[in-house]
Length: 286
Ligand SMILES: [Zn+2]
Image 1 (cartoon, protein in one colour):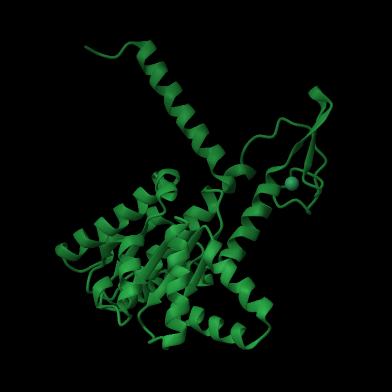
Image 2: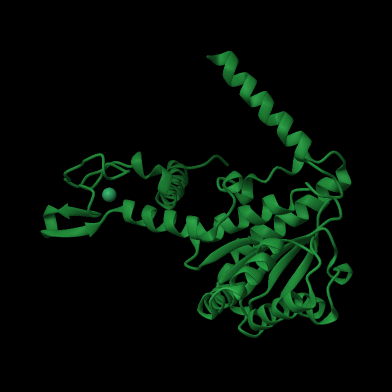
């Protein structure tokens, strides 16, 4: 039996609804949305909707509504606060390209890692309540761990109402040392910040041997985050149990995050080559 006209119309209506919902979700598209509201525009508003003060006059109600550029502004601040390295800022979890790995086996491992990241974003509220994170690891550097973790951070900053902070482990140890020699206040502030960040992205742990002293401070940071149920996401070249840290640290990390293996393959070269090809294409088009 063929479809009735009603069924086809209903299908179109649903599709339109879906497209509309997606459009609304995507702040980047907001420029293309029709503006039915009368407004004074200037180039101060990045969306060209308000006069730069973040408010739009709605004549029907003789009232003001908040311009979407204010949301962008908050998002921008949150993004810069998150300290995700510039090179990773535009990366999205669902654009993580699994086909880049050379073998079927590696593509399956990478797909599972990507699936874990997508699942974490989808069920973020529930998982964030438990406070459990992910631990991406492979002995091989350049396998895409940091890339996926940063993409995950971008997604969380942009869609969830939480603080995110990216820091490499060696940088964290340096900071601990640096602030401790300074004023007490500075050290306390730094410790509070790292302990209380909603979602901490800790890159490349195990790359540097901490001293007994940094190690005990690192342990107290992890312990505080564990008991406060704050989510931490890690990347490492070691599996958790092989980390060159003492057992107190290892046992805490085991409780804080689920280990997710990455393919033992570097994709840096492939990515660089692809980027070169794209650039050459751009030159040819000119
Ligand atoms: Zn505006």
